[in-house]
Length: 312
Image (cartoon, rainbow, N blue to C red; front, side):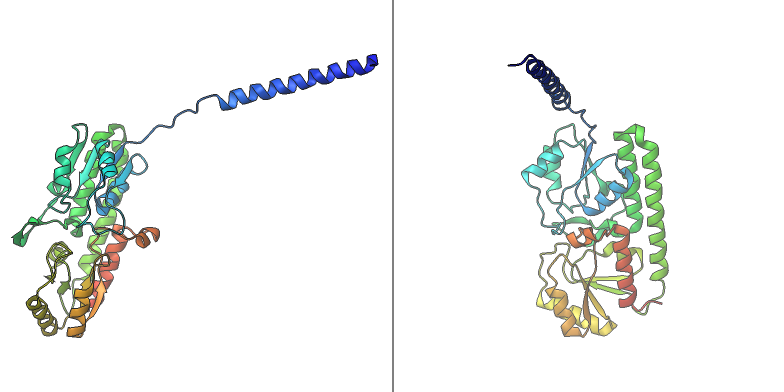
């Protein structure tokens, strides 16, 4: 082999060696270094949609809010899975609605580790006693339909989150104040919107709207009790149909997430129409995708009530 050829081969080998070493160095530095872990947010577990709404409004992006009851499910018949129970057990804070709404919450509460702070939100609001006591308890648990109670829920979230992460207390105060301002405007709109109506009788298939009726001076008549799976007697159905005709009620309301055959039957027999009203126990997937909130859904309810009761 010629001398010149040997020199060229050595030069090429040297260059090739530099390239291989450079690649090896780059690979070592980009693929063997451990990524810097991102700081994790504390996870707060809440049971219902309304608690999730208020918690998220106050916490912003500082906390991971874990909603236990799946979207679109009947909150009355829900029971948490073992994986959900495990998730709650690792949360520093678990907030449930209370007043007997979640039948699973009390036994779960007694089994959680001491590291989990448990808050029964019903102890921070104003409750209404039921007309007739039953196995559901003395109090009506649907307290969030009184907007004043949602304000109290928001204030409680601010207090709890400020205790959990004291450094964020000023932010929680600011966020809570902003959300409460929206709730106060909503309350004012209800007061004005339902001030003058031709009919103030609210007939629903499920006894979930007592707080809404009480807060707005409406006469509340429900076909079944607090459980959505109850069935009314023939006598009850007949009495409701008679009442609808007597008081000139134009609309029978039902919940979108439960069977509406009772309301549809009464409507057909009385000449009224059946329409959905959102009790905000939960929301559907469609409502979530369309970015519906407590405030927007309550405004939808107001529009339906005004039309049904012929308000001016």
